[in-house]
Image: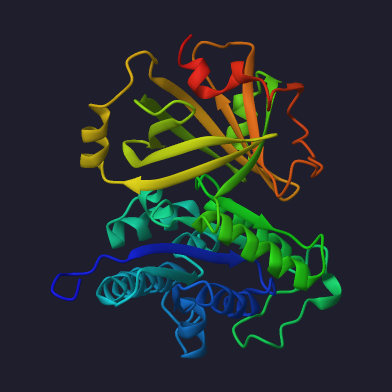
Amino acid sequence: MSESKRHPAITKVVITGGPCAGKSTALSWINNAFTSKGYKVLVVPETATEFITGGVAPWTCGTNEEYQKCQMSLQLEKERLFEYAAGTMDAERILIVCDRGAMDNKAYMTDEEFQRVLQFVGRDETTLRDSYDAVFHLVTAAKGAEQFYTKENNAARYETVEEARVLDDKLLASWNGHPHLRIIDNKTDFSVKMHRLISEMTALLGEPEPYEVERKYLIAFPDLAQLEKMPSCRKVEISQVYLKAAPGEVIRLRQRGIDGHYSYYVTTRRPAGEGKRIEIERMISQSEYLRLMMDADLSYHPIRKTRYCLTHACHVFNIDIYPFWQDQALMETELYDMDEAVEFPPMIQVLQEVTMDPRYRNHALARL
């Protein structure tokens, strides 16, 4: 390939979370773990810390909104340049790790301010959020590990324990709706917390196989008005079709977003037994999406559904509303293993678990 332009495989992820969640240590663990696996690891530094320690802050700028316009602009430009640089490197696999991503900024603004900042940088919320391959939210030590909460290791940190908890919730809500959002909580000691993060990232990258552990439940039709009022809930419209595939394999083409702003994905799945499956997914352009649509398997109907994404007890729950059901819906959550206990959101009435019931898989519903 010395005579032609290289095209390294580039994956861009976000490490986020509340104050004193362990992000700095996590970045070191990630660098060591994935460098040893043969990745070139690039780290986009946290923009807010750079600005605040340099004297540019919400309280030094004219208004918080003006500060956020500066921060969002610099954040996106840094990511653009890191991606450009990665494309020139002599490496087969590159992992770009963002120490916080663009959606973190939403937690520090009103909804009206955020919309004006988006307009200022010429972006929309759906494509901005989904421009990252995965988001890993490290829960603040102020939730479950209070004895380790400190402000001494970050000059830009000023939050009290209670403020840290509130901010952690706001940051998580800002990213809710991303198709690959993972929460790393404090139910274990810190070393195991870091191992869990590396394990989740390893699965994302397919080292050795990208296993997905999922549990699915049939639920009573939820109160949609109540869901839409929840600050931690995000609504997403999904349209998907199935492509022609080899026996035992499912290839899904998906459009997801809202209000005319969409992201596009193609996903290949193979069963791996007992609720596990091997899943390989990649984001694609709208033009590739339209091209692949020509290879649709016409024995399946297109599936259209409204998804409500919410977080509860450090789990991400996806509630899918289908137009052909008026009294029931499906809810799914991804776990570390099939034996992990699940605490359901209190407003949800679970009718039965259907993880292993093939009748409730989307490609089965597409034949209704």
